[in-house]
Amino acid sequence: MKKITKICCIGAGYVGGPTMSVIAKQCPEIQVTVVDINKERIAQWNTTDLDNLPIYEPGLKEIVGERRGKNLFFSTEVDKAIDEAQMIFISVNTPTKTYGKGKGQAADLKFIELCARNIAKVAKDDKIVVEKSTLPVRTAQAIQNILDHTGNAVKFEILSNPEFLAEGTAIEDLIHADRVLIGGNDTPTGKAAKNALSAIYEHWLPKERILQTNVWSSELSKLVANAFLAQRVSSINTISALCEKTDANIQEISRAIGFDSRIGPKFLNASVGFGGSCFQKDILNLVYIARSYGLTEVANYWEQVIIANDYQKSRFAENIISSLYNTISGKKIVVYGWAFKKDTNDTRESAAIAVVDALLEERAEIIVYDPKVAKERIFADLDYLNTRTPEENRVLVTVTNDPIKATEEAHAIAILTEWDEFKEYDWKTIFKQMLKPAFVFDGRRLLDSTAMERIGFNYYKIGQS
Image (cartoon, rainbow, N blue to C red; front, top):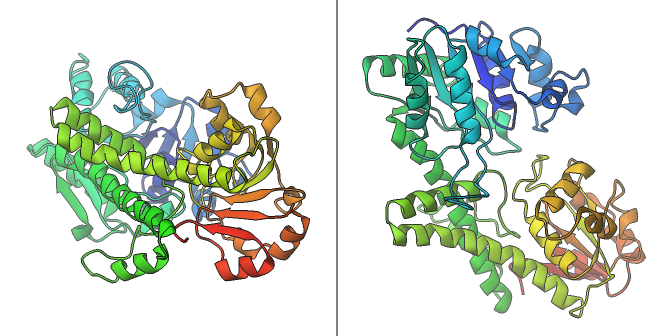
């Protein structure tokens, strides 16, 4: 396998952008081109003001500023980049299907297939094609089938290289990865392709952290890793409901079980529920695969993780409604946080969307503040649900840039993202200007119960009675 000097990545999203930026930083001798058919998104990646990149990730703008124009390029010239590259990463969206067979569970692979057909059409010499999107098992086979029947006599090696990034720490996760997984065929050319990709990561990671497997193991490992993490979150959240009915405190329980070396402390923070682009999608994918092989019990087991997560969100919304005397029509509720977690502007599957949707069903007046999420994104998320017309959403929901002023004459505040700045607010001033009794519903266990109650708030914290 010849040395890799040019890489192309199709898809300039949450995975493609940061991953390729880090590769460009760590491998200055390799030319990295990120392509996308979305002209607006590429223009944002090329913006002179690095604060306006399409993705907010701590540490990203510094790397883009350092490498862009040297060996990191963002372009809409997809065919040119494919033609020139020896290695092509596919990093396009694979949303859950909203139609037809597998609706609501299976991954929609139309963008992946369009990529494969485009590569087949353009390629004139041998290429290594790397799946970087979150994909169901057996996608590599589908890509291989499309590429093998192109008639150009070009040889393709397909690798699966799943990403294990957590948004908000993606740059850190890439530079100090726990492990890199490379799946490929166990043929001589397959092994050579795996080694070529491994050599890129070896620029900054020790070789023992780069695991080579067959394609199916690599693809399934990604789904299983996310399913296990999500399962921990749902597990602790179901216990938080029990704590609220008894006098137990979920934080003390998390700490007690986290000290057990077999369990460990991570992913045991009770909250209003998990969100993000991967957890739900990957579990639904796992459920769909299990069902398609007739493994009903396996499918039901994993589906329960999603059911428990939905329960936590609806339980939180119902608690707000019942605490406000079972009527919130016309009442002003301020929502702090829209992103699915802090330090990202990603809102996919965010708990805030489900909670606010439930409150809007009761005709509450909602004011939303999030330090990084744009107003257009917030309305797009609500409109996508089709629960109300876009016009109704804009009558009932206001997006603000002033989180303190927003609380004037408000009945309640709901904290739905754990942004650090919420801890620093002058809660005494907020209390003074709210209607009494003033309620705070803390879906992220962010604030101190004693301090909030001393100020005078009716303060509800998930996982405590």
